[in-house]
Image (cartoon, rainbow, N blue to C red; front, side):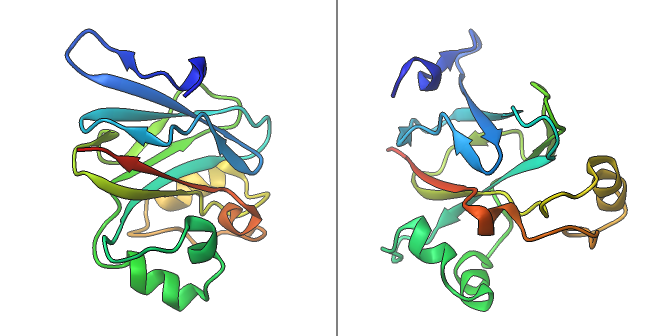
Length: 160
């Protein structure tokens, strides 16, 4: 870990790590975090809306996140589709603030995790947020390929 990925003690017995989203990657992702660490998303992109979807990778899965992301969509869905994501946060372009969509950002269960952004390239940020407020899942809005297909994914572990 470098200085930007060193966990920060929030003073409340919690540890926080800020993940920086850019076009099209996640930065400052530590290789491993302690259980109970809270993740927070910051968006350094001037134009693109980004999200951080964090999903636990099944224990039996040994392939890297790059190998998993290269699989057909149906296979990826089968691997990650057993339950809801652990965390979903969105961040508007150029924002240090995130919008919590699922969870409070804290990971407690040890294991390997994938971090992915499924926002379509070039989507209008406000239109996406407006559409998502009335959708049970990812909204159907015009845009290019999901950021994940452009390389916006990472993996890390939550240690025991």
